[in-house]
Image (cartoon, rainbow over all chains, first blue to last red; front, side, top):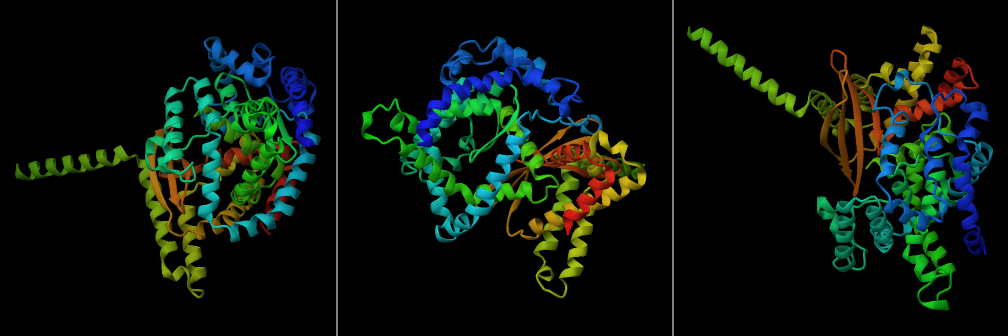
Length: 304
Length: 196
């Protein structure tokens, strides 16, 4: 039900995201929290020029087709937002735009109650009953299965080294690693696991974070990474097998794709909660701590 | 003459030794020495024994305090807001923030089992600052941790970057957000409250 709904909502959602991303500069000026941020964020400045006006998959091709002008704009405009590692002490506090603060805060609380409260005992029980090797094996198998996402995005970033690495990992782990259950390729330092996704590809071509947004159940994201999620869904084999465009016809019920994704989230929940606790427990302001950690983590991922 | 030659040789040997040390990086050297010291304390059976544990814990905190520049870390965590604190508030802030970090990270450090620290690279950040990239390997996990150190009569850590997330910047976001609506005293109280 929700799945069909979200599929129908995908296009309007995308358009909405693009609209809000482009309108973000004006929004920023009216919002009281951001008038102190002197320099407009790169996202606000450069998205109008390059905002994808087509659905994610199509715009991906567009980005790949004309990569040359994009990075130039990116380099010149991203510079002020990411100061060269240091001199933080003198820079005034510049938060990532958060125009949906009340929505975000509500869903942050909801997600916290849901995962950290309600689901935690189940995750603990699961981690207790199911050995770590099995959990890691399942994660490996799923990650191996969704290899096209990483492969396609490495190609879209014109990072052929990463693409060949992903391809090599897929071939080795699918065969020697018994369908990806074992990550045998990892033993080779040149074949360390990667994590490329569409949000990073957009970032690579100069799209800034945009504003911060917290999705119910999916957690923290940004305008850019939300579009990225749609792109990843398009590159996910589950979509091809179980989606509306499924290559094998109507025999495969659509909800399997969500069951598998949900199972993967649950399987990883013990680790996710550990990472979440590492951010939230020492925090004075948990909402901001999670927001900042997400932004920093993603910026680091984009830069690699 | 012979004395002169022996002195020359000695000087050369010393010079060679320092040069060899410099290749690994002075910040890495200081850091790895401290890490070794901390690991040695944790691996000491006296740390497990309940009667010697408090004394060992004091030693551990002292060893950590030697390599961390709490004042610099606090100053950077406040960023530009630091100047809005008067000296007395700054002092209280450093103390409260230090205790908060101590309380949250001591448990983590004490849960140390057999993880190995690999020192990867040392990058010069300019202005007497350096970033040492390390990898903590253990229990089937690899965690990239980078330490940023500054040299002020000895290298000291002023920031820790775990998986690309800078501790100092994360706190700067939080304090920046809080200080938009709250006074320095209220923020200090909030930090102090957090530790209990």
